[in-house]
Image (tube, rainbow, N blue to C red):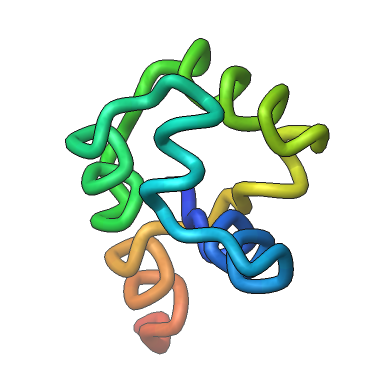
Length: 80
């Protein structure tokens, strides 16, 4: 399982904010935002800083999804 941050980017679009704006108000580095863009792991403290800056909860900025390998394995037909 992994985290997707599409909800975070949607919030920024809805609020007419750039990633640079988010970086400034949440005190999160540009490198960390790049990690989020790539779907890489970041520290929960960073996610909480973002939530605090945007006045939202974790479920508002991320979604947990199954790995592609998990999905492809579960969709393969079983031998009988």
